[in-house]
Amino acid sequence: MTMSIAPSGWATKQKRWAVAIAAALTLVIAVWLLHRQQQRAFAERTHCVGNLVQIRLAKSVCQEDLGLAVGDPIPNNALDKHLPKAAAQFRCPIGGTYLVGNVGITPKCSYTNVCHTYRFDWTKLRLERRAWTHSLEQ
Image 1 (cartoon, helix red, strand yellow):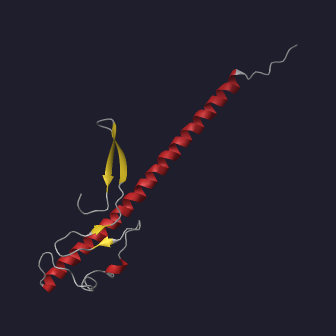
Image 2 (cartoon, helix red, strand yellow):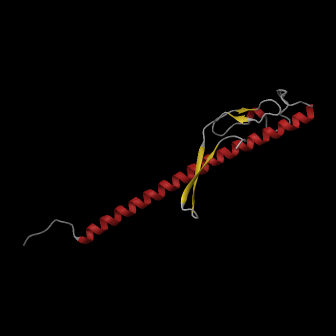
Image 3 (cartoon, rainbow, N blue to C red):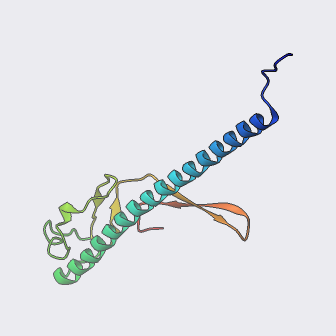
């Protein structure tokens, strides 16, 4: 009587299923991590652009209050009374600094990298990518 040490058909199927399940779980975790990273980057970008909008509005109020012409510099502490917190405390969540600029010039963030978000368009059956910057000029 000879004994075979080769795996039976059932054991081979179990191994294949185990590998398939492990690969599927790895794919699901990778997609979930990518989605979380995109959400975080988009939230940081949205926070930064919100700060830029508040700075732009404060600049326009300063222009009206002080009677400044386009291109005139804004006095150092003039923005502080029109912003909910001091202009020095406004910070980009990624570490950029805000360039307020003169009257009539859009404020900018020094962070220049681009974040991308992806979504699957089911009507066209393709993956679409959108680029986001820390800017009001988009």
